[in-house]
Amino acid sequence: MRQKKTPMSVDSITADARRHREAREKTYRERALKLFPWVCARCGREFAGKKLRELTVHHKDHNHENNPPDGSNWELLCIYCHDHEHAKYLDDDYADITPGDDEKSSSTYRPFAGLGDLLKKKEQ
Image (tube, rainbow, N blue to C red; front, top):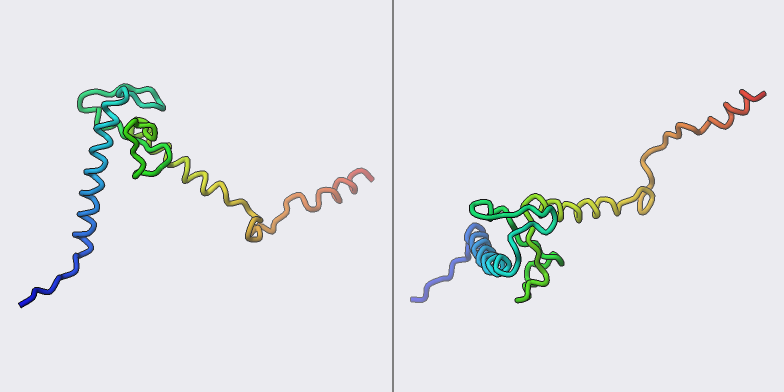
């Protein structure tokens, strides 16, 4: 009798994906730590011992699949600078939204609308 294949659960798929990512990260992290000094490329803080875990590998082009053997797409950043680096791109995405591009400005209040008339009356 042939056994029916049971579909993988979402939890097992997620766990497999995590294991795969961690294994991949481990290999390029180890290579980056051999290639570069253990210093954050942004703030210049040095790392050693237990603190070394706070030093992360940042992909300059943000493509985690682009891992050249010479490390040209990597830089070592501390966890704080790494977070800041990624936050810059999020901030840029929000900054690209300017009122009036695709939608009308929601503000209708014009605080200086009558100022010219008031100044003319005052001069008379």
